[in-house]
Image (tube, rainbow, N blue to C red; front, side):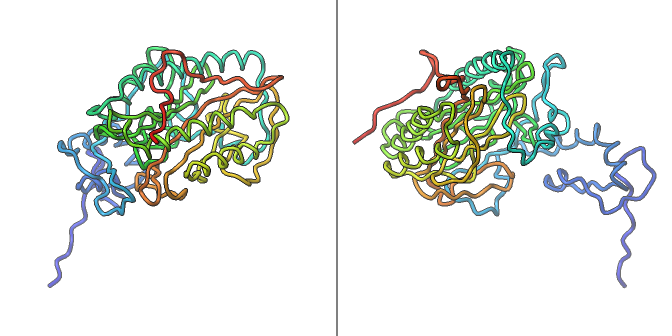
Amino acid sequence: MVEVQQPKPCSRAECDNFASSLKCPTCLKLGKDSSFCGQDCFKKAWPTHKLVHKQLQPTTPYDPFPTFSYTGPLRPVYPLSPMRTLPDSIPRPDYAKDGIPHSEQRLFRSTNIHINTADEIAGIREACKLGRKVLDTAAAAIKPGVVSDSIDALVHDTCISIGAYPSPLNYYHFPKSVCISVNEIICHGIPDQRKLEDGDIVNLDISIYYKGLHADLNETYYVGDKALADADSIRLVETTRECLDKAIAIVKPGMLFREIGNVIEKHATANGCSVIRTYCGHGINTLFHCAPNIPHYAKNKTPGVAKPGMTFTIEPMLALGSWKDKTWPDNWTSATVDGKRSAQFEHMLLVTETGVEVLTARNADSPGGPVSRIS
């Protein structure tokens, strides 16, 4: 005789209904079956139910995607720390609450490029100076043995100390306050429990929201003496740095945005590197990402002409191998398809009447900086 399964009660303690097929996805990942009678009941239970997840988290490090076909040697090291919080006094972008940048989505596919007012430009300058401070503070902590999640905590706390919101936090549900991308990771790496190793290269991508305006910048750094003795890593990192500098040098009123990619790819190719095509620079102001799009590869067809008052980023990503990418199952971490190393640099720029102002420029005492190639 076939055993008849008895219906399970809803997992919300206050509910007397039987559970439906709706299950908590987080509990399933952690090996627990929590079922609810419906979506409304799940929402009502969430404030207390989410506490169960902390109890279920493994205490030993683990790979959350053991069956995934990684392209290189890097692996995520979970568990992730809980999403960090901020004081209520710090102004937040519209996505901070529900993870959806509603103001950006209203302008989706718009090619209209905002011209900043004098007051907006003054505010953007202030935000960018603070963004540089956050990046330099985080970069100073880079050394072998440092856990990437501790750098995320440092970035988060530094943002709080200056009254800024870390722009990545909960942007389309990104769980951390900074993107940390190591070795073959192109961009959007999620800080976790992995320790930086002597010989790594690591990109810190800092974005902050301050007084209603965003700032965005990133740099790639060498970890330990082994990285500084690796000729290929140095060639990659320094070529990427030079590509950004050469692209910035052509920015002025009247420049076609599509020309930026021609300059970058020419220098990258001459130095044996490829240019990642999936990701691009972008407009930035009161919105984190908006028009114009700035592709970094040659012969692109992006529209638009630079005009005084525009602010945008140029952020080339280069690789030692293929330009193609593969995304991890966390839906954020982008790796090179062949597992070879990648590097990135980013500045936020203002088009002036006569040329360009680098809003996120390095200071004399900023960590990192160019190193000589090994012949």
